[in-house]
Length: 114
Length: 113
Image (cartoon, rainbow over all chains, first blue to last red):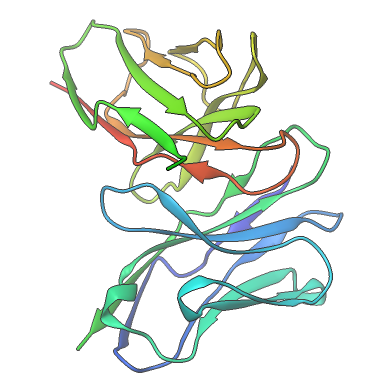
């Protein structure tokens, strides 16, 4: 079964600094990958997704992520963080044609200091 | 606007009571899902449905039940058999059952008193 690891539970960055959130997955085949963001007490919003093709994907709100097959990683990046980016971020993995579910990581909470 | 509506937003229940959480979508999506979210544990799948009148257990189905009588509706019942029901519940849908991203509702927070 596929699994997802987000090794950082909590990250604090200064506004304007760059950001990288880590995500590692475990699965033999090529998965499809997602990053979602969640504000407190709200649902999840899709930031970006990777299915195939270019390994660097662009998302909303200035985020990007890079799929690295050799490292089984799909890290999320943003060159300059804004205070409004403070939220919880979830990486998810799925495999086309299997039992129709996505597996989510445990999330990384981002705090932004002014 | 198309989307997923969950209700109620907040719900309080006494031990031993069943409660039903509503999930309605107008996205014309075939597949619908219920996830449970607890601090530090991410999202765990409770039940999912790929078509009307069919559903499957997820990873933590014990103490929960669902129905899918209409394409747009997928209610979740938290029964008294669920030992630790206090959590944040998220409903999601996607256009095609086996691929693509999930679209989420705003969630329902259930607290057992």
